[in-house]
Length: 496
Image (cartoon, rainbow, N blue to C red; front, side):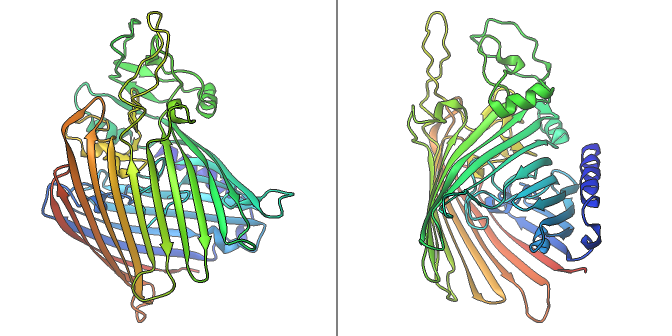
């Protein structure tokens, strides 16, 4: 709460220094009630995942949510643009009874934008409604409060006549799941508190949509979890250095912020095998877009890396997310179709070895995606920050904050449409197989099918009102079978 108060005061000071006379205009509100129930031990997979963490695994749950915001687009004709938002929820059978989902202020000057606080951020290139999720930061976990400086739109590089553009961001933030980690971890189990967050990315656009229908966009994004405090950390069995890891005060000074940016330093429990400080994850992106008259198609890929071993090409890029997305000409049946194939099975093979006097060659394998010896898993409030198909720690009945299904292959399909101006639907289907992990292999592969069918009605006679109903189902032996339904009622409008 102290952190959120500090963020709010900082955002308020930033906003008050701007032209405050317009901050009370173009303010919108939204109120929503949501309830869901199912017949299994867990809620259907797509009821719980890719909901920005405002979700639960419990089969019977609900929440009431209210938000007030001023979109920064309200000042689109001004050099200085200002936005802010507050989004709160009271929930039942969720990890927290009261949730500050969003609380932020933002200001934009020409091509630069500063965001301070906790805000639901979009994925760089993934469809937020149909995709299985980004490999680094999807819409699966609660927003992380942060200070973020970004170029939100592509800036045309001078001298290229609009054919080459660039956008980028850098951010530092703070995790808010201290209580969840303490409560979830069993006796003498590993957990961390007061961790810090860092993110950086640069993307390029090659092509001019005004002159050529084909464009390429791509780049790299790297995130990091660092600092904080650790309890009951583990040590490598072949490490001869004796360290008390029952409680470790991680590096939290200014130097740690630099190490997060520059891949420097080391963690206190690295012992004889020094590595970089913190839990670094990243991905390369590539998108090829073609826009026709009233339709478009996009092919895309992501190559995820969990450390330096797959940052470049020395081990080959066997693990990828491949996707294709098409937007069809206007019709009452299908508007968008999407298909993705995900493979994370290789992870530079099952062999891992650091150089030693007896064996001076280093073999950087066994990457163990989303896992880390200090921070347990790339997660926030129990939900994976990246792609949810690698199964979040919240599902673990071992009370360990770890990943047990990082080696997977999956096919994911999605379609959406607008049969009329007042009706919208989407359907998701996912089939996946898991080999477990190299440390926790499965004797036999397990499989799962996840289904979601959702429809939203917005009656013309009831301006601002919407009703959403959904059906969800899990089958297979990876997660327990379940079938359920949900309903949401929402009212939104303009305050002033």
